[in-house]
Amino acid sequence: MSLSVHPVEGLPEIREGDDLAAMIAAAAALLDGDVVVVTQKAVSKAEGRVVPDGDGRDSWVRRETRRVVGRRGTLVIAETRHGFVCANAGVDLSNVAPGFVSLLPEDPDASAERIRHGVRERTGREVGVVISDTFGRPWRRGVTEVALGTAGMGALLDLRGTPDRQGRILESTVVAVADEVSAAAGLVMGKAQGIPAAVVRGLRLAGATGAGRDLIRPAAEDLFRYAPGTAITSRRTIRTFGQGPVPRQALVEAAASSLTAPVPHGSRHDRPPWLWAFLEPGTARGALLASMGRAWERDLRTDGTPEAEIARRRERSDRVLADAPVLAVPALSLDGADPYPDPRRREAERDMFVLATGAAVQNLMLSLHAQGLGSAWISSTLFCREETAGALGLAPSWLPMGAVAIGPLPEDGPPERPAVDPGPAITWA
Image (cartoon, rainbow, N blue to C red; front, side, top):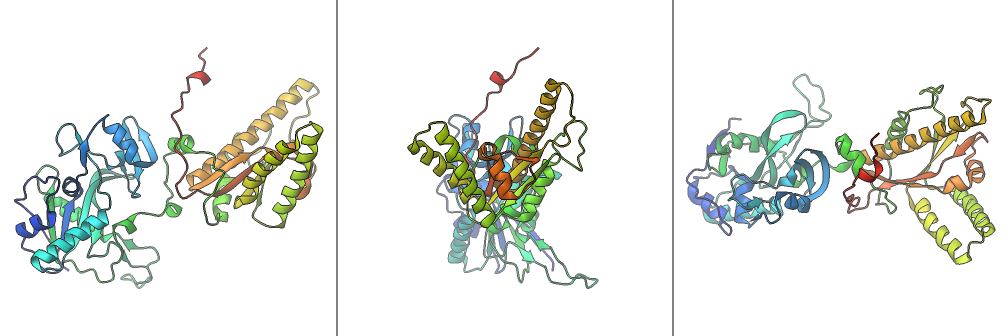
């Protein structure tokens, strides 16, 4: 296969309402099978997605952001509502008039299809269309063109199950051909030449499938979903979970993360003072909740709590603990604590073990968050340790330390965390 790439020259400055298909059809001598690559900026201008900056670019970045992936200084790497992960949620100042910003097209695949349909109406040619944009890459320096939307050509070429030159069967190779076409076109369009479109000729992609939206990696496959700092600050307590199972491997990885918490002196990381009991729906969880419920009600009545309040608390706790796809109960053993003669030192030693368990719980929840799962720490088992240990079959030396409800995030994702002012929590000495 031999390719040639041709800039579409002579196009005027694109303005809102311009018919890009008509302009490209008039400026380029197209052939059947050509792929027309059009820059996102040209599409955004034609579709009215260049807007006054109003309160500044940052306000538009916040509006266009669905999830912050990472921050450094004024740079924000964010996921847009389309699912693209890019700098500043695609909000751009380049090649637009002062006082305005460019936003990504509402639906790049639909934009590509409109241009394709318009070109066919005017020329009779069957062409593919790619909407391209310039993205950075997390592991490499520099930017390159990628495909936001496609029409008339497959975005992905799945080579899994086919042999390589040595006859080995490929197991994971899926080629992002739409991105490769975008990068090739970018070589003749440039950033300052004022050429918003190019034609890639000679492409033969038998078997390529999918649209631009299919280039977005699903959250379940994303191993780099958050920058480390953002993973910490963006985690929220989730009490209502989405649909689907929790992979056991995710729980194993989260438990492994919990073991990196600092352990009290004298303890060993290969024998930490805590364990995790993971409960999926079934008889063990049912027995646990029933035992806990009886203990709560007994203690609340002893405290004189009104029956209506008992019912309200029971319903609230039961709903989270019973509905979560997985319940994780951390338990602490003080067997490794140093039996100091001084009761004050024994108490301090116990505090160190409790703090270590809290760090393990936090590590587990952060790991779950980084893997795209939600969690909520519930204190209930602290108030009925004996009943919890009995329901889980734990030895008397293990002290249950609350519970973590775990499940998929709700469809609309976790709520955005409000800005935190650390000032009141800091003192300088």
